[in-house]
Image 1: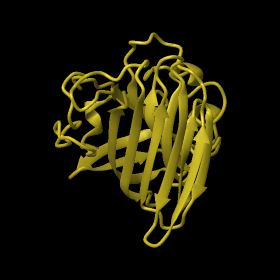
Image 2 (image 1 turned 90 degrees about the vertical axis):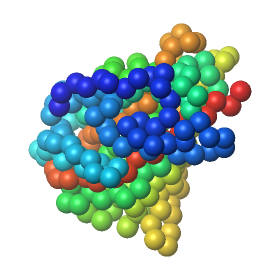
Image 3 (image 1 turned 135 degrees about the horizontal axis):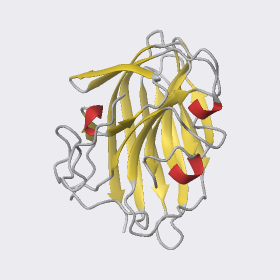
Image 4 (image 1 turned 60 degrees about the vertical axis):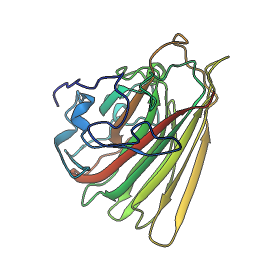
Length: 249
């Protein structure tokens, strides 16, 4: 997958389309085109990408043999696919590592079709491009699937993941709290996955601290790898993606 970087970190608002537009109160910012992010896929896990009406379609290749570096939930490194961008608030100001802020996310219209054992993380990192998990240092909410018709959702804290499964799940909500100064501690993340008549929640304490300078740019990241260190079945994965970053003080 080629490298693309066209997003203006000072523009604010939605990525590639409409959003909160500076309105007061909470409003989702929809990601309408992943090609506005910087993309990296050193091991060609993604075969193709397209988007129509805000519905992203990522077609993956099959991973025949499990690789720990494709699993962001364990080990030391992550060399799966990723998209990342400089995170801003609605007013266009950059999100800094020393800020106290909350990340919120929503994923709707989730359909893994025949693809199996894939896992996305959607959240915030101190370094968007590093392949070393401790350097990237992500706190995120996750969504994926363990089998056809069995979606999962969870939390990622640096290199630790916990998930829950829910048959028929199609929507994931989550948030994450960042403590800011003093300490730049990542506090915790919580996630719930919804089906038509039920939901399944999970959460995870982080308590690690970012090591970059207080005024460093925070990045929004979407990671894609295997669910665990496992083989996968390739195929088309569909979803719509939303987020918001709110400064708390």
